[in-house]
Length: 446
Image (cartoon, rainbow, N blue to C red):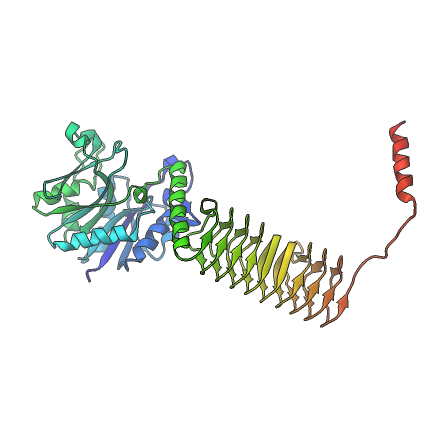
């Protein structure tokens, strides 16, 4: 099979984003836009990924590593940007995809269609991805002949009335024959009002050489370019809609799909039930037959089969939840292993800890894991029972089968099957409350 290379244009600073951060680094579902695009390209097993950046964009370089970097030293147009990548394409004769780092929603299926169309006729020099929006606005128009071949890309400002009536618009995305790309790019000039080198001129150049150019149609949604925060939110909404649909098609139940938010890497088993208002941050993997109850927030966590989470639970990075575990309402778990069948049913904080199999953690329990300087671990054995309102001051170990009385502050290790109770002596003063109220009333009336 002919090889594939991708040239991703990412040099724009994105002034309209009103941000100090390069535009392509703004995130959708926890991942930079340019990385979404690279992930799609990688599904095609691309031989080369080249990201074109402006000088000093070290943060973009770090984000896209190990992709190759090409530097566009001056912002002189899209043709100039692709020319910056040509040294990395020396000797490459496969298909070159030209993509845009701020257009992250393009699908693998669309790119495959473009490549297949380019390869169908070995003489085809360029395939341009077009779309037919409800409102063509001021997009460049794709002008085709009676056979459907692409004759020209006409910018809106240069189009006549007949051309403006054409509904097929230019997305800017192209597939170019790698054996021809050097000669085509070399002939792009800058004889225009802005003095820039426009990649769109490549079609006219190819046609003058009697090289066919084709059009593939994509969906308007997948070709959304993100130039401001409003469009970033629109792209997020499109991505979430896709992932919700995919999750349900693969066997998860979303009771109120529109209120569930996934990360780009969320993994769900079969027969998972997700209640309303659940948010998944990056790094969540969920087993089979799990129920995530309403208003829960999860990130950086793995959850075993038949576990129950929430409502109003927060699982933070490093939480490892085994099979049959129950995490109840207003429970927070961070960097802790909860083994099979453990229960933390309500109003507790478990951090830097191990909770053994079938252990039960009572309401209001906290692991005091931080002394202001360092973190320490709490270890709770299998079958242990920790009573309500207990403070476990780490480092501390509760052995298998031990019972901690409610209201205890535990600072020393507890041995297997022992009962540990730590409470101050109870003091009860008869009539004190009535005398206190009388005194307050007297002071108030003065």
